[in-house]
Length: 213
Image 1 (tube, helix red, strand yellow):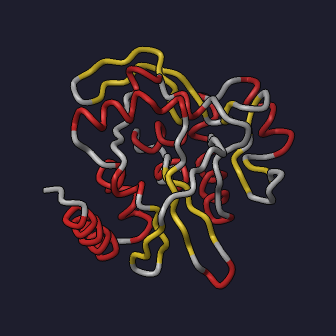
Image 2 (cartoon, rainbow, N blue to C red):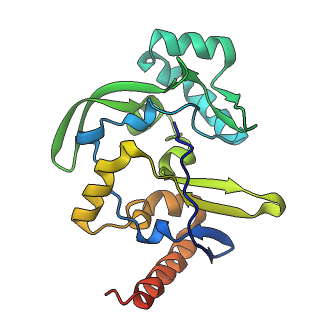
């Protein structure tokens, strides 16, 4: 699920990808104990997906199905795992105008902390259990970074600042962890190791320019 509150910030180019500088400077670290995974159940549209990802999701559907609510199963039966939103993007289907159909609930142990009744992704759950190969859409893994594709194959990345992620900003500030470092693994999954290394160099130069260590 996504909010559409995208701020306009200075842009840099990294390896052919346009990057808003906030991705390199803003503190961020998801705090599931505080938010409960609210980004899966808030917003007004599903998570952006590609045609290839829809195929992967459909291949994982049997494994994920028992973890879905009856309402989510009914939506998928009626319109499938994805639909085209008002902006013409393919996105995951949603329930009651907001909840991703792949939302499920359960306890989670992360970083030594036990979190009860947290929003989970059924696709990621069955993947971690070894019952499917597809983890979750890359748009979900990258959130709160949102990817925009422009004509000519140009790609841009922006930080989608959302009120419900305030606990993540506070935790990131306490840890001294910028957004791009928190999302290191999904950024590498999307763009590769060499690209991420270049991103780190750009971030280092930006810190030096600002007089930071």
